[in-house]
Image 1: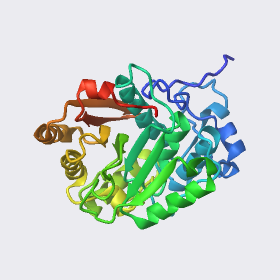
Image 2 (image 1 turned 90 degrees about the horizontal axis):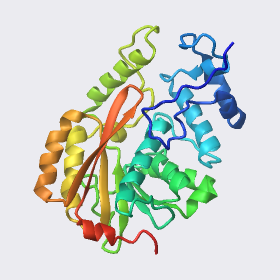
Image 3 (image 1 turned 180 degrees about the horizontal axis):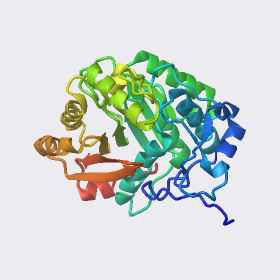
Length: 327
């Protein structure tokens, strides 16, 4: 019998440590509750694979996804304690850390090809959610510092609990609630602030109804053998502010673009995920109105889904080169 080897997920970023999939035995060792959700995938391609190599979870089960996240954060990202309230967004970590790695590559372009690391690299996470995932991953991977913002007081409260439960995060992540939901940067970026980058995973849908339909479709696709449902709970959870807003993804990003022009010298790179490629044309038109010095669109492929983020800066190449990554 030939030795089984994990298949490389070549669609993930080359530095993404999850390219080889999950070693569930190691993850269960650090997070025993995950054992309750691990099953054998009888449809694994290589019939010679060991039982361990065929292990997986039901990704349509939000409790299973949360247990997997806990295990990954403990095993790979120096997190001792992490939890989220019921029905809040439970993000897939491999895709989230991909965004972090690609931002690192973007920053390297402004730093003579070297990825800047350490606490003086300051990120602003718009819509940090209750999971605090981007600041956690960015700090663990590159030592960056973060400010996380959200309009949801319960989300901010849970992020505070996560930070307090993990002493290594206390000096690295600060939080601020956006009290005026019409705005993104107002009240958040002050005159003395200086952010290396902004990242954002904007609300995807235009309405609660649209979000529910998408959730139902996703759950049915993830578990095709199960009875079809027309009232699915989102497989990764999610509150309304995480999932939808007036104008949906496009409306949110256009607002973000217009507001960014008020802080042209206070951030090196503004970035945002764009889930719907059909929105790119309108986003480019909006960006043209605020006249950034550089616009980039960076593709990311994750699983069967292709995503991307748009980045823009108001700084010239000379100003970018003069940006101080270290104090």
